Image 1 (cartoon, rainbow, N blue to C red):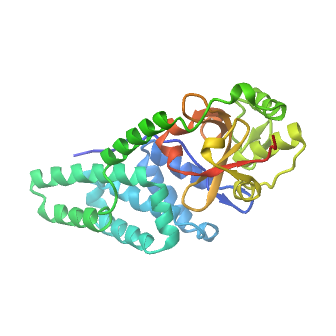
Image 2: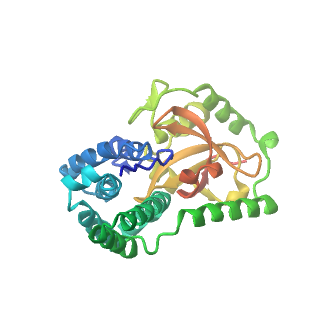
Image 3: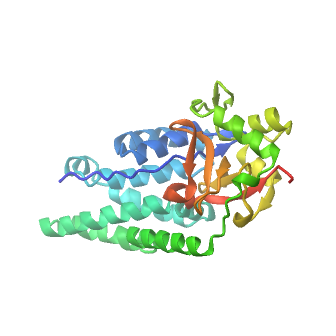
Length: 306
């Protein structure tokens, strides 16, 4: 029996000091792409480095990669305590405020993994693997008991989308935006394709907050704080229904605000942002068409008065 799930998500960086943590980005990308062995090895390496002790992310990815890999008979045979260890780790994470925030931010990963484990449990019962099935059942009850089924999240998405279409809370304002906003967006378009670079803040390469701070300083002569979380704190907060192209959108991946993009469009009852993606560099993505981004929105802010 060999079952490896593939979950397609975009990547969102965490922040430490004044920029993003590239190693965390790589963990998320590798897991999203189904490279569970790589996630397992890299998580263990990060846990041996004290500079990453500030976050539960390495422990989280080590635990869920164990649960994915354990579905392979050969791997399980050589790591017979992996499921027990993963269970203990996830229960410990659930006990802290920071851990609960991290798990909420990764709700889709947890829901998808829950679905995988439920199928594995069915297979184990059919194969007569009673002891292994009992262990897995305890994991599902104790760790994943409050995690919604993936179908529930999908139905919730449909419900939210239908409600948004009825309310039309985001209006199309692209034809009425001010000159500063137009200038900012025009320059951002010219940078599409520039690669992601950790700590980058120039057209040679950008990270997320390097991109936003570069544009604001060069196009609007406004100097911003370097970290995404500081940009969030200093921006004027705005409600979604008042968002315009040129405003900022911020994301929380479980360890506080850690990613920022610029609102590019508010057409079609949705919001598109232009940002520095760790996978493709400067690019445009529809936030509300992406389960990954939508569930991580921390809020919207603006530095442009008009």
